Image 1 (cartoon, rainbow, N blue to C red):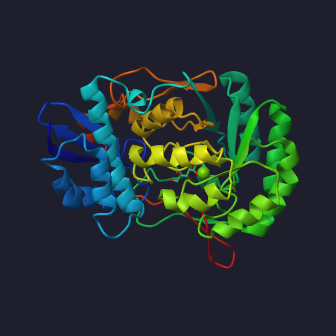
Image 2 (cartoon, rainbow, N blue to C red):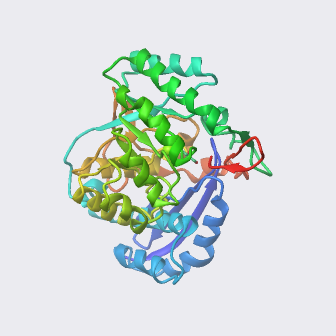
Length: 395
Ligand code: GCO
Ligand code: MG
């Protein structure tokens, strides 16, 4: 079997997504997700100009070799653009392998160790009051066992305003000192609203400095968070260690990591309890298995990044990883948005606090190219945050 065509499909149903379709001479094709919120076209160009020609004519079963060819063979090691492009192709190759073997992806990864996947959803709303009401409703009406809050910014809801054509990023003001007590109060009020048995995840979204993060964590650790996510930015590994040493709250980290080697200090130092890399950002399934195995060695669980800016293809890949990994912890469920399901079929669905999925060979998703063409790309940016003096803050 040989690859004869590689297509990139850029589409914007709810927001922009970038898909890869790799077609073989046997008629079997594979699909993959290479979406990179705010920089999709750069990834598409890398695939079209540089990576597709390397793939055409190759045996699709040589997945590891292709991964190494892109990672090491580029000489320049991967950043977000390269790793996302590599992921789109890597997923498509695993999909072809599953389809040609007639087996779902999880079977190729070693088979199931569980049948359903514990998940959490984002609590949204304009005001703190709305969010507290939604948290209670999620638990009462939808049966969620774990919910996720985010240290507040209005545009941090839904698609963050990236649904329109934009010529520059939306700017949001942020005063971290003022937000410390609001952040603490919000968590405690939600704990009171949902009761003791519901898991509460709190995403601080790299928005506070290490000392500020510690002041928040020390005040909420007694209210039993399921985990605190990204208390600090990933750039300085010692900042994470500093926070870790000062709190008993479980810590989840890693959606901005781009490789196994970036994860290494947090894993080998056991500075985290949950590793939540984004499978697209680390170069796909091939790398995710290696990172998961490394985390298992250090008793660290996985919580793969799964917001609504990754597509059902990635949600499906996460699901296959989750059911086949021993050290699965929890899965972020960003599968709820509507229009993307006109373009991509398949993928996990929510049921009573868990994700379940209909089983098909490969990843189990397909792309409707005509539907994708109905939703042309719209240039959009992730918002940026500025403090009152105008300086940029991590968003
Ligand atoms: C999460 C994340 C996302 C990111 C988003 C950026 O935990 O789900 O923090 O919501 O903000 O992926 O595009
Ligand atoms: Mg996050």
